[in-house]
Length: 611
Image 1 (cartoon, rainbow, N blue to C red):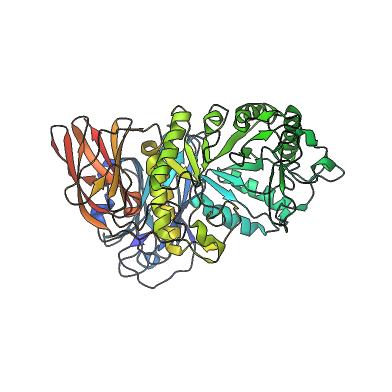
Image 2: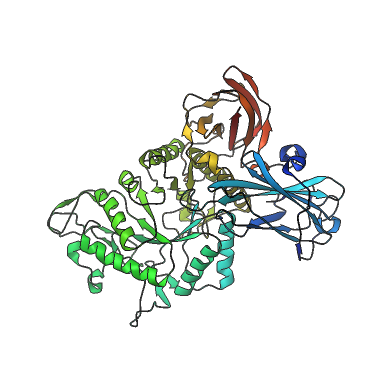
């Protein structure tokens, strides 16, 4: 988002200006540090222009197409188009500028487009810094945006969702997906798109898909909308994941060829089939079938093949319902439900090729899911993981189960109690939760047509304020740009805890202190500081929206045990300068390095690179 030192009120008629890079520039002679050249631009300044990319992620060797929308407020003493000026775009990988582009923007311009081809390295995150200089030679504004170059979305998953599939105009769908593209979401879960759980795609007598059908909540679903969303996801480099339970069936399942003998029962006499009750106004409760029953699996896989034949989904997001207690087959044999999950996933991938993700509700069965062919580990957290520290605990558990090779996505629903009625998400609660998840090495499924506050994804009771939308954009940029430090095999170093002379710090997440922990990421040492000094409570869900906004701490002094001679130290934060790196002066004595951070709002990341 573009930020500026001045905000004159002149607006422009929009037209697109094609620009070309100036010749003869190298990264070394054009390097600009935002924190030095634009020190008066503070976090939270109004977004005066929008920068976007055409895709959420790119294959190695693929060109990135950027568009910057100028709204007439970037100039010094006049609008961007009135005064004219220069755009300098610096492309950074972590703390290093890998290349840059410089462009002259003529009078009257409002949209600027250009392309950049990143280095061919796979699985890299970049930050593009777009700086505006007037013809008078003064830097007056900037924008930042991240770029992910990854051949497989499962390496660094940034998962989102879609939950409304009624009749829509194409431009409505386009607006939804373009917004999600700005968050760099590389996978979308198509939640409750299906007709019946045991027969997800409604087919007509001729074997072709119906044009429309009711979903389980009796909402309208349009085939055109589902297909249109899949196509848009693919256009933007996103994967489209088909949501369905692994053991769900409607009450009328026997009329569709499902046998009661395939079910899961609460008693050994098979008199009481396990079910998930739903509101009376909905189409059905969900009756549970046994995923260890081969006939049920064959039936369900056949139905999922029909989906794949008619809709170009990229894979199956497999859902479950957590620990269901003691269960039995129709023959009275006890069933250990989680033991069926791994085998079911292996057989599903053989029968219905594609990408697989499975929800581990409260981590139920995650150890076995991690051994199956899944892209990453997904966990929906509830009462067993209530605290901020539990978010990190779940991510650490996933890293252990996946042998350090599978990253985490957490379904963690924000301001849950508030979502029973209309209101707004509480910004401090959302940002603190995201800070903990991202710093711990995970990501958060949150963004879709709205943001998730309930396990029923279509819930839209709580609104995202413009400020929260702006801040979340910066957080997703940060997650993407610094993915190689945050979740590319970083290992925690429990012996390298930061100390401070002017703020209270702790190795544990506790109110009244800054939570700090250190990780080794490649050859770098990374220190995370999360500000709980002013926290009203330590429950990540912030159910009633009472989490307090932290006071911004200035000139934060920290001393950290380091493993060698520090070559350079720098920091970055989604709360400052769009996540751009800020160089730090370091004082080292023996194996301890001291730095002073300019400020700490929610989350700072400090990086030590060694000689």
